[in-house]
Length: 417
Image 1 (cartoon, rainbow, N blue to C red):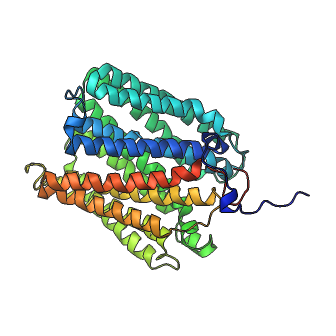
Image 2 (cartoon, rainbow, N blue to C red; image 1 turned 180 degrees about the vertical axis):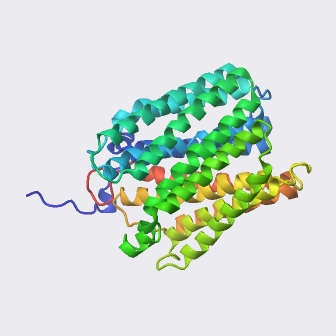
Image 3 (tube, one colour; image 1 turned 30 degrees about the vertical axis):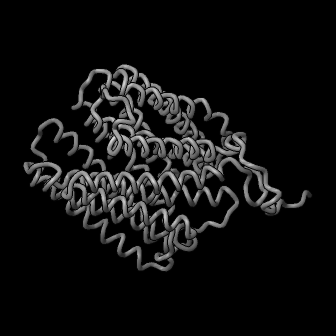
């Protein structure tokens, strides 16, 4: 029997090389997602603070371009890394080779390059880039459905929810591509709402529901019992109604009253859930705190959205709560959970101790500061908006560069993968 591989001394570890990105799906997709996250953050910082550094013409409205890039630009790449690394384990299937995902990753990166170029050069180029991204994501969604159907594991609930959400994400990407091609802001806003509440949020909450016990201490039965299936279905029902009400508002339907009640009740319950989770054993460790912060931001975002509907007639940017609500969900919820989930996987699959060390904790605090600054910018003016973009860019760029160094090197414990 061969001896077990042990940790490599620091001086014996090979240097960074791109071939290591193909050692595991999470390496390849997380590296691409990190690159896109950094590009998106730096591009928006330039657009806000140094517009002269970008081409003068905008063929797509800056706000719409920003929304499309932040909604679809990097999170689906992180999703792919997670689904095709953890997914086969959930489904008791053989591991997937990273090389099988390389064409899709390259299509996404080239598609987003074309989109960014088209924002400043020609809208059809931007639409073609989005179509390339939609094609790659649709292919990945079908591949995950095939994995799901080939599995004989009895418990596939979370995988089914994620697969369904990924299909919605493909439809939303195709719709936003069509909206850009047709120059239809209304269709684009509907596609973004569908992507937010029908794709991104369900994937986040399904993964969160499955992995919460592992982020505290260990997966113990009494803790699993605190997160029953009815809670998952309640979350998903809340998100489905959010998507329907968002589309209803786009269509001019009178849904404000029911939406206010839903947002206030759902947001309040999520805030209470985050507070209760904090009291569980292990709930005050750093990694669980990062997830709790995400759930808390989601609850606060829904509460702010409830307040934004009655005051929607007030001048935006001063008294309206809608921008604050949106960014509490996108920056606060998505950002906090992304940092926690990806960092945990990078450690665990990289042969390192799974812990939120001081550098990660500092970056997480910076991210929280950027969310607070963005919320203040809703009422305090453009200066706070620039500060929020700068803080966000520093936090996500430093975080991305930290883990990019890991993805291009062998595992710290010397094992394959």
